Amino acid sequence: SSLHMKGVEAERYIKEAKEKIAKTLKASENEIIFTSGGTESNNLAIIGAAMANKRAGMHIITTQIEHASVGNPMEFLEEQGFTVTYLPVDKDGILSLEALEQAMTEDTILVSIMHVNNEIGSIQPIEEAGRIIKAKNPKALFHVDAIQSYGKFKIIPKRMGIDLLSVSGHKIHGPKGSGFLYVKEKTKLKPILFGGGQQGGMRSGTENVPAIAGLGEAAAEMYEHLEENRTHLYALKEAFVNGISKLEGVTVNGKTGTESAPHIVSVSFADVRSEVLLHDLEAKNIYVSAGSACSSNTRKKVSRTLKSIGVAPELLESTVRFSFSVHTTMEEIEYTLAELPGILELRRKYTRH
Image (tube, rainbow, N blue to C red; front, side, top):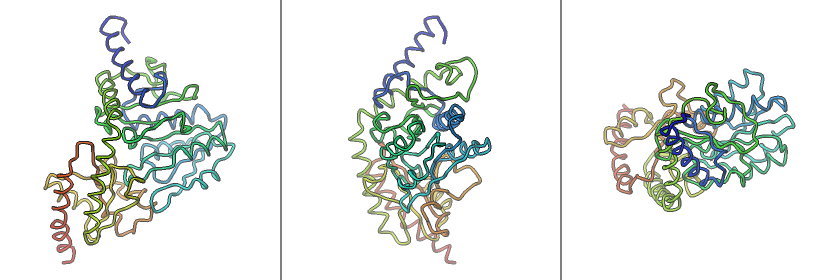
């Protein structure tokens, strides 16, 4: 924000990052607001949109499998007098478009649906949802949590009927603590941070220039190599799912082919607690998470997503998420598949005794 040359230089980095990101979304630069990450982007989109549009209605729609950074702001808005409808999903974690259509009312001001689920990798029919929302109530805003899908899929908000889109930097190998919110032009949004009026008053606070520059670079790189990255990830996923499905007492949750995200596999292991398995794998330099990494340090253990897709109660605490990145190799997949049988056999032997 400074007027001297160093300030101007810093501003140029921010402008360049905006240009790179806007290009990936076929959006304009003034539609990008930089944040501290996915959680802030989701909070700004949901609370900001609800507060700015409450005169038009007090009804919001979301799904039962959203990330906590969407679910918790929804609970906060319910305390403020808003009504929230939580749409169910099927066994593969996909919402029903008919249920969405039926839930829409004149009073609906916001619909928030995640693009790719962070635990099971299910992909929601975002474009079709966007069409339904705009046909039923053109004034309702459509927010998409694209934290797990940006950099893995082509997303064109204007074509898909998206008004607000949340992205996190570290999911695309950008710096941790970086992110952005796409806000379609003329979308009414109230800020949730107040101060010096940076970013057009929408997000006060001195911009984190190094993080923003890194985020812009990461976005450009991910989209430059989008197709080859995705082909690589789907090949890893196919090899992993084929290998792990041969093991005894193993269930892969949700869809597994190209109808699912290329980088996430949710696996339930009968008679083995996920936390125990996590540490056994860690001892072999294999790093996985029990559910979502973001919430794995909270005390609320049982995953809403796994319950919503009907995972058997005895498997809820025996489920692990394997994630792949563009840097994961086929050798790492083979190594994991070679180590798992011995670990499972040992753990189950202890369980049975």
